[in-house]
Every structure is written in structure tokens, then in C-alpha cells.
Length: 84
Image (tube, rainbow, N blue to C red; front, side, top):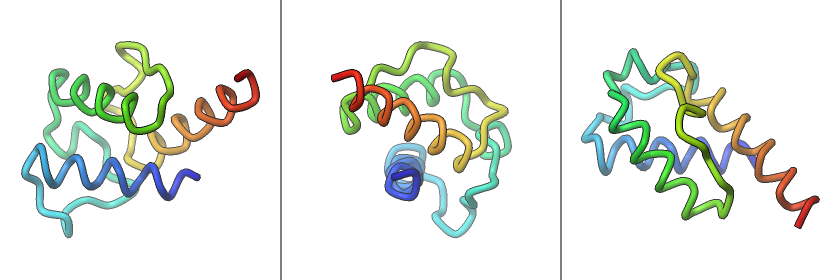
């Protein structure tokens, strides 16, 4: 479920990137949250572990929003569940 993934993304941003939770909205772009490529890679790796789905380098881009990333990863998770 995309809401679950959004929560995981927000938790990562708060815990690892030290962003204030009240500053993170679902329509916030990663670039607007000042996430660099290294932070996006760390987020990808953390979500890969948590969701059990492969996230190739460059899938999470600075232009993506929190909600957009969650929807994209939810779709990938659903496809991997069907394929597996």
C-alpha cells in the first residue's frame, strides 16, 4: 500500500536526513527537501531492504515527490508479488 511506503519514506527523512516531520508533505519533491544523490541512494537501499523489491540506481530522482515515489514503489512491489 502506497500510504505505508510514504510513511517509510518520511521516517527515513526524519531519522536519517534529520528533517523535521512537519516540513515533509506528500507533494514535496526530494529536491525541495535538499536531498542529494547520495541521500536518494541511501533511501533506495533502505526501501529495497524493507520492501523486498529491487530499486535500480536513478529510479528515485530529485524531481519525484514523496507520494510519487511511494506510488512508483507500490506498483513495483505489486508486480514483484504477482511475478513471485
